[in-house]
Image 1 (spheres, rainbow, N blue to C red):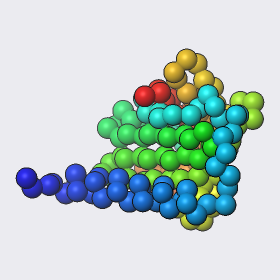
Image 2: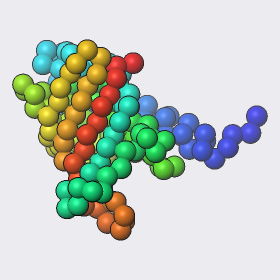
Image 3: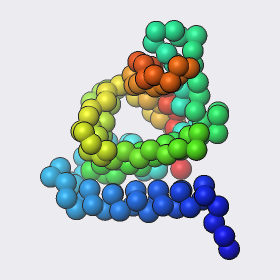
Length: 156
């Protein structure tokens, strides 16, 4: 059976991500002890919406999931997370440490470098997790700009 380019790239990306996760968990200096504050977020999540809205021009907005993209989030009991975005024929993976305090959520990226921390708010209603934060996104002109990010995920 001949693999088409898209499936080959996705298989390669999945293998690379699995390798990065095992490497990160083996080499990290962060604790792998359970973090009770993330207990309700532990598991696999899949986005039903990932809406990006320009801060400079709120009339400019896009939903990457509605456009055929996928976004998944895996949260471990220690707070370590893996996030994978596939959109427009491209993919991105992020590894890090998630922490929560009240309705505030913080994602400290450990891969890809350089380390970075994103913060926002979250709410959990049944099996639906909603996260609102700020990010950067290249809208119409191809240049990254400040954007509001609204993500709705369901537990798998």
